Amino acid sequence: MSLTPWKILESSYLRPKFRQDKCELENGKILDAVVLEFRTWANVLAITKDQKVVLVRQYRHGTKEVCVEFPGGIVEKDEDPLEGAKRELLEETGYTAANIIEVGRVYPNPAMQSNELVCYLATGAEKVSAQNLDEGEAIEVDLMPLDELVALAKSGKFPNALQLAVLFHALVYMNRIA
Amino acid sequence: MSLTPWKILESSYLRPKFRQDKCELENGKILDAVVLEFRTWANVLAITKDQKVVLVRQYRHGTKEVCVEFPGGIVEKDEDPLEGAKRELLEETGYTAANIIEVGRVYPNPAMQSNELVCYLATGAEKVSAQNLDEGEAIEVDLMPLDELVALAKSGKFPNALQLAVLFHALVYMNRIA
Image (cartoon, each protein chain N blue to C red):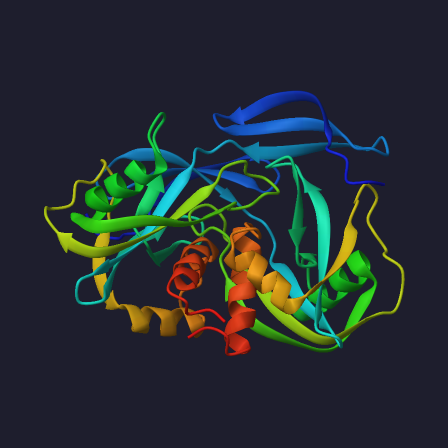
């Protein structure tokens, strides 16, 4: 068999954004594949003037654990991912950053998601306001020296694959990967 | 609000492995959260004796693109992740490796998946048999010099977040991240 795209015979929705495609493969095999039609995500590794990374801690229901992540979230319809990253940084942490640049784009999971995660690196971050959270959102802000965060990630104690992808591209930009 | 775990009021299944929990948040808000109950995944960055990485190319229906990845897949019930990684490497590529070690464990997506991806690094890989694919699986094997793969990843042309997490931990092990 060759790497031919699967033929979609019909599509339905298990719930909004959870599309189920009845697909026909090249060899005639039929299977049901789920595709999560999420919008673009944006995350930002924001560093303060004294080289501390702005982190958020929140309960994640998949693993049922409190996870440490970079601020970020879902880019809104018709919103530029850069603006989405700035908005999420401000809403979740109350921080803005003097400089923010895109360092990479990744697919969270090509097998079943169509969306991209856009990775940003910000410097000169400073707190300018209180958090402005959505109803039901509970987020704690934490500051950690950049080198401590990198050491944590290297030791396996920053185990979120999506956040590691953001860190990877930030470290590439900083010339820290040989 | 604090980072309290959500209270599950009731659970149902959209389809097998796709659990939908009706949750109550600390502030009384009710929401439906989906958790994908996938099994453990294992991926292996396998390097041949002449420093080439064994890669697989396959069609991924989420992005509808052919993706380059490290060999790997779903660990079977009662199977050790290490054995799963070895099995997937052999089935997908026909390669075995003289040495294989775990370099990290990550969560593919803590917000909606409970499973882990176990990352392996193998050296001394060599081809010992033909592929042994599941019905309907179409996978092409590719060899790429390690430094070329790292350069590709650094330039953003290896955009799969899960594979980048595997590469991150392999590069940590090789002392290539400062």
